[in-house]
Image (tube, rainbow, N blue to C red; front, side, top):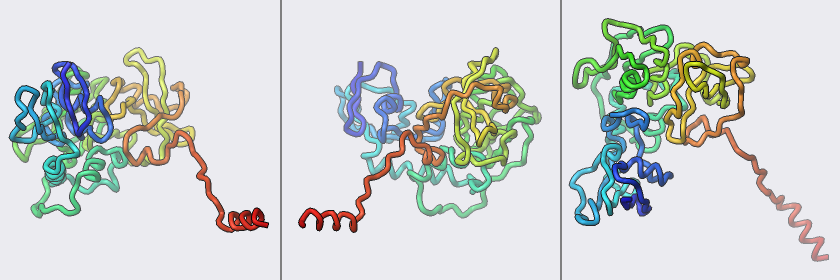
Length: 325
């Protein structure tokens, strides 16, 4: 076991564990944000740079600090390593610059984007963004591409995290889309405008951290903060059938995979469960989903409502006078 200290909190982890994985075991504010790394997708990480941290002590044998900030999702733990995340002004300043860079070409689509309310980029910019942007040039634009009747691609919103490409490679088993071109003209697209129609292709929606890939069957139908996420399941021959049903009243508006506290899908689901089963009779609803993530959709979901003890000053004064008499 290797010993690691992150923001004055020490933990022991197995060899081969990255700094980000160790931070997630500790939990709380020591966990760096991650927009491209996904624990269930091999090869992911190292793209967005939002998880940069400062290694103030390299190891127990060589306590010298590393000269540059490192990506915590790609840096393995060394015994005796000391890492700074929130406690480093250098890291916080670099994270603001990274957020500013990610927002250079990202359009202000939040009022009409279906991802609003559960968008990782929204949360990241709220916690680490700057008040104003220095970028004055025209934003990058792309032609609208139809990739099928189930998934909508908004390339203008894409931050090139590569998650959807890894899903197609490792989960779908049939990839007809990927990154085209290089540099600032790179884009996610399909080969000769093919449609994405694999039975597990809908999972690219769940892994997308922004609103670049959205559900066409849910498009513009409702806002996520008006819906109540309910844990549900069904006997599905293709996948586990364990999902989150987003409901308003007795109507199901959309189906997504169940996610953990870091916003990662626990088990990938098939397209039949996601897109075709929208009737409440198709599912066994277990109950309300416990939302742990810091998001607008979790603000009005309480485990228990406790009525505060309020003392009326007038009643307190009258009670005091009665006791004196």
